[in-house]
Length: 312
Image 1 (cartoon, rainbow, N blue to C red):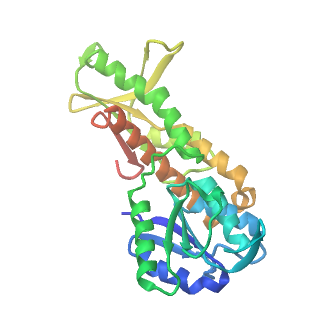
Image 2 (cartoon, rainbow, N blue to C red; image 1 turned 90 degrees about the vertical axis):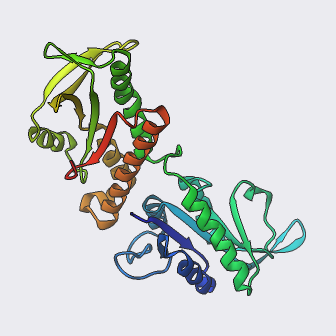
Image 3 (cartoon, rainbow, N blue to C red; image 1 turned 180 degrees about the horizontal axis):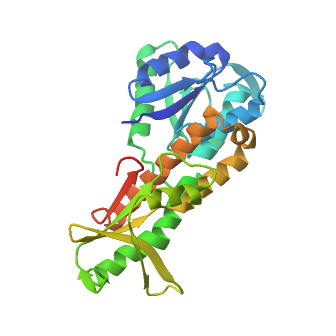
């Protein structure tokens, strides 16, 4: 099972606490602390724009924890207060905006007085210097992230594209087969039908050409049908195996993932960096996960199989 990637951000003064949190979470997550300097996993790399690296990190990681400790004193409405470093608060807002409140948590010293703007965030409080309360707070975040699904609506291109693909192709095929108790082709009515969706192992620059290559390795026959409420015919490739009619599709809509990320990270796209490929892989997995969740939600999961290239 692939572990979710988790980012931990903190002030430089509290790296020891960040490392304690990582030690607790390593079993269940692939954890990276903001200052780790191993080249392949480092967030902030030499000669790169700091904000650009942060934006990239929000695309690479499934979950984020920001560690809030009483690093700075500020005066608010005439009263002296303790608050985390400004950069920690900025990163909290950035990660929460990209990942959503169920995928981002604020691990915070209980002595810090929070502003009302933090209402709605996932908060886990601990008592500084008390290891037991810290471990309990980290455990609460761990349980939150582990129970959080990947099918939530968000701004990632994969989830949106999977939803559009599902509504515009998968739903019409499944409903047509159910309403007609099968599908008629080659002068025969097939009561047993299933849909096979093949996802590539990786996304190339020309997805259409990539799918044509995949398609050429499978002997299929194209069929079309008119679906009620649709102004056009739906066209789909099929093959017959053991008296079962298989509808086979290669979702070229995933080229939108490549397009979206290449615009967000043009520098990495041009040199196909490891970071870029890591984000692409994550988005492919999100596309598959979202699709499978939608199938289960609509009761089509027994009719439809979603597989990666090479696992057919």
